[in-house]
Amino acid sequence: MKVTFEQLKAAFNRVLISRGVDSETADACAEMFARTTESGVYSHGVNRFPRFIQQLENGDIIPNAQPKRITSLGAIEQWDAQRSIGNLTAKKMMDRAIELAADHGIGLVALRNANHWMRGGSYGWQAAEKGYIGICWTNSIAVMPPWGAKRVSYRHQPADRRHSFYPNHHGRYVDVDVLLRHVRS
Image (tube, rainbow, N blue to C red; front, side, top):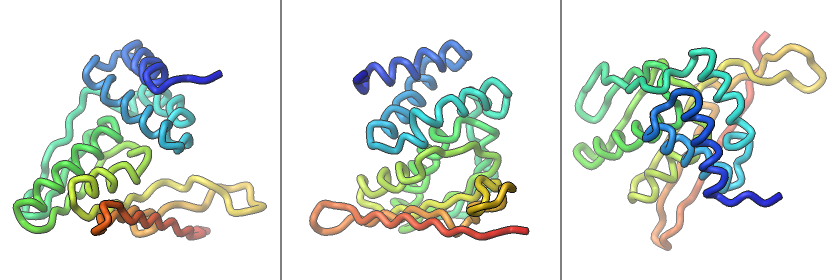
């Protein structure tokens, strides 16, 4: 069965609206899930969507929440996501980092109380497409066991998952995706 981009986006949108997400937010969120899937990152697109819906239904994600700026120090800002939709919030925060960089030469945005940002590379591309270098990183809870183990103990540390995007003079981007693993006992 072949599903077009528009069909997939419409399906995501329908499910989001049926869960009480307002139409504008649902459309933007559906667009991001569909784009991630279209680019071949199914693990953070169509395959992640059921877990996202589960978190929405459990109240872990607050669909109408808006990020709130906590601290502003010129080129550096700290924001509270207030458990809003992760991919939409990450996109807004990269937009904000780009605005800060335009004003100060660098823009650094830290975010707390955020949900999963889905495809981290999306936000680096977002910066690169506007002519900026985007360096994005995150942390997480333990998500997988080491080979042969039953207990989950591998986790991303803040410096372990990083997407760096550099526009070059050929009109292309260099994408450096770094993921290291640490074992916790």
